[in-house]
Image 1 (tube, helix red, strand yellow):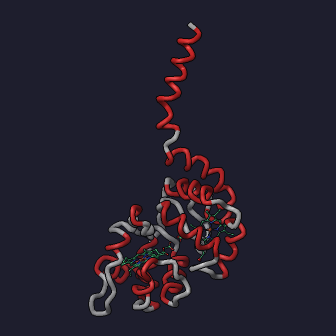
Image 2 (cartoon, protein in one colour):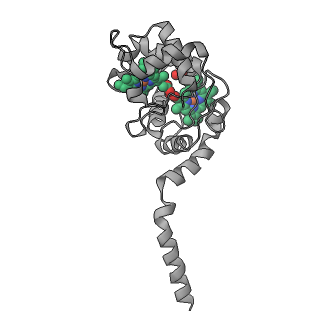
Image 3 (cartoon, rainbow, N blue to C red):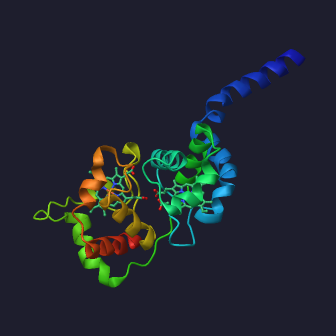
Length: 208
Ligand code: HEC
Ligand code: HEC
């Protein structure tokens, strides 16, 4: 009797294994605890209150991981703002970073109210680019709703704070941010004027 009970329990436990080992669930739960230190700036659910701190909610995990590694190493996006974050990530292991990324990827991004004056120019550039100026449609890589392409690690850009987006587009344009594979964003941003950057950032803040 006893043996039968034990083996039944064992069988039940074994049959649960594939689920309890499911990377997504286990990682995100551990990641929530590990992300406590990030909440001060990025918000408890990845929606930051201050517009100079990027929202991480709903961002894809591959992209988050790559950026945390870049900020940790100081390679590719070193600037005075990312310096304020480095102390929080220098001691994180690869596993910690993956868990935290899984947690943020599961959160839901809030959306801002796009300034009306930005929408017309922002939307036409985002959806159609500007063939004469050699600017490709942003949508082709960042998706129609600004959701990004998780499988490729292309970031979500919809709902993001305006000052943060303006800062990043200028950093790509100036060649200060070099984390983009094959200079994908530097080549695009090099062709953008200040006015176009402002319109795009405004439009993106409300895109969802
Ligand atoms: C002191 C405030 C602060 C804390 C705490 C902080 N960050 Fe950041 N984080 C920033 C700032 C500022 C930036 C933007 C840096 C830049 O402009 O390049 C940033 C950028 C990021 C980015 C890139 C976002 C994007 O869209 O490219 C990721 C990912 C990130 N932080 C993750 C984390 C994680 C994970 C933690 C906790 C382990 C953390 N941050 C803690 C301030 C902070
Ligand atoms: C060929 C594909 C491609 C096109 C076209 C493209 N992007 Fe990107 N974009 C990327 C990739 C890839 C990254 C991530 C780079 C990295 O890893 O640092 C990125 C990053 C960004 C970021 C930074 C996101 C963050 O959270 O820091 C912004 C903002 C952005 N793109 C806006 C735009 C806008 C606006 C356009 C159109 C004018 C555009 N992109 C066109 C591929 C593209």
